[in-house]
Image (cartoon, rainbow, N blue to C red; front, side, top):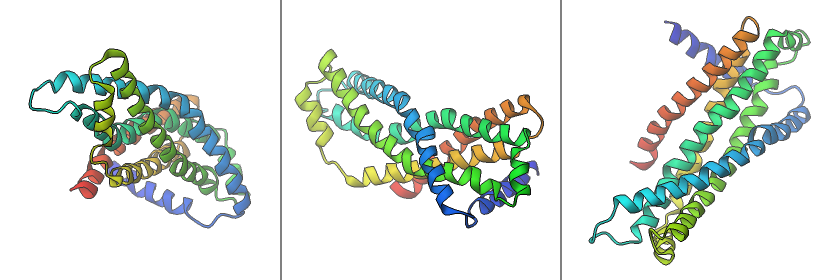
Amino acid sequence: MKLFYHIGRYFILVWTILQKPERASIYRRQIILEMDNLGLQSLGIVAIISVFMGAVVTIQTAFNTDHPLLPIYAIGFATRQAIILEFSPTVISLILAGKVGSRIASEIGTMRVTEQIDALEIMGVNAAGYLILPKIIASMVINPALVVISMFLGIFGGWMASAITGVVPLSNYVYGILFEFSQYDIFYALIKTVVFAFIIASVSGYFGFYTKGGALQVGHSSTKAVVFSSIYVILFNLLLTQILLV
């Protein structure tokens, strides 16, 4: 029963968040600020993970597809498909669930336990919308850009691994990257990323907004935000894959 209680309260919060804002200009400034805090400041870790992820996928694919009937360019093809369809949108979203989700939950949770949210509500401000909506919009805008960068860097990481280790000739790797490329793969990955961004920001905001107690409870809310955001990202990854690819 407690699960249904949280699900119901989550959807009530989402409905409150989506109410018409009091002053749109304040929200626009806040969205730009959140795009920097939640997105651009995560660019470094996204870049590092993507390059090494692409390199590892290329090397492992090369060592596990050593068959005379399998063309050598299949390594580049498999690397491209793995990075675009799964690794970049899903793995990067899980990384952001840890980094961004904990930040959102701890920030809003601290405001709750220090009664700043209560002060906003007394002044007649839609506190949920003011605090969470800019984070949701910023995440849904900037996360797809991060994933596109991750795709490029992941493929580049595979190219670097090919050049350094020689597991596959560069010409064959590039040919495999270009072989039967479908733009729908990019569309599919970005659709998943937008949904994941909404889940991460809204679920983390939920746990932060309903924090009770003190600093210890803020830490608990932050942990719950990361855990549940990651679980829902994995769950919706399965659902979206079934809907969009089957």
